[in-house]
Amino acid sequence: MAEEPTRTAEELNRIGVRSPVRRFLVDPVLPFTARVGSVVGVRTTAPHFVLTLDDGPEPGATERVLAALAQRRATATFFVLVGRAERHRTLLAETIAAGHEIALHGVDHRRLTRIPHTERVRSLAEGKRRLEDLVQQPIRWFRPPYGAQSPRVWSAIRREGMESVLWTAVAGDWIDAPVHRLADLAVRGAGPGSVLLAHDGFAGAEEGADDGPPPRFDRGALVSEVLTAVSARGLVGRSLSDALRHGEPRMQAWFLP
Image (cartoon, one colour):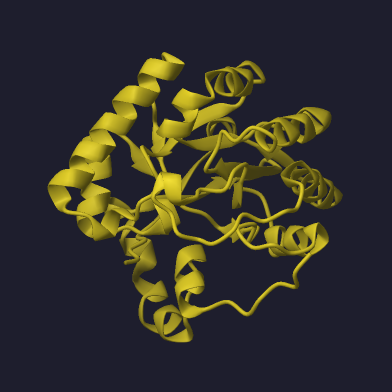
C-alpha cells in the first residue's frame, strides 16, 4: 500500500485542520458562536467515543464495518448517500437492524458551497424526504460533504429540521495508507465525547465526487483497530444519539468553503 502523502491545503480544509492564524483569531470567540454552531462533540463524563461513518452503504465494505462493530458491541452513526442507500436497501436495513443510527450525508457527494442556493435547498429537502421514506423514521443529523459549509448552507440545514454534525477527530481514510497509521491518526487526542470522522464507503464520480481512486485497505480492519485503541483508553464506541443520552452536544461555528 502507498505511504501516506503530504496533505495539500485543500485536504487540510476537508478534515478541518485549523491554521495557527485561525486558532489565534477565531478560536477565542468560538464559545460565543453556539447559536450558529454545528455539533462537533459531546459534553459528557461517560466513556463514549462517537463513531461516525460516511459515504455508504457500500457492498464489500459496510458489511466488514458492521462485523467489526458487532464484535465490540459498539454502535455508530452512518451518514449515508441517498442514491447508494436506495441501490443497497438490504445493506441499509442490516445497518438499522444492528442498532446503528442513520443520518444524511446528501443525495450525492457534491460540495454544497459550490452549487446554486436554490439547488442546494432542493437537494437537502429531497435527500431528507427520500431517506426518511427508506428508514421510516425522522432524520435528525446532516453532515455536509467535505465539511464544506457556509452560513447559508447551515441555515438551509436548520430549515429542514436537521442539525449539522462535523467532527473532532479524523481517520484520514480517504487515502491509501496502512491501517495502523490511519488508526493512530483516528485516536490521536481521543477522549470522552470526541466525534470521529471515518468512512464505510468511498464516494466516486457517480456520486459527484472527484477524489481519485478508492483506497484498498480493509475498512472493517480499520474500525476494529480504532475500537481496540480507544478501548485501551477506557472508551467505547457509540453513535451520536447514544452518546447524547449521557451528555449534551458541544456546538461550534464551522464554516469552510
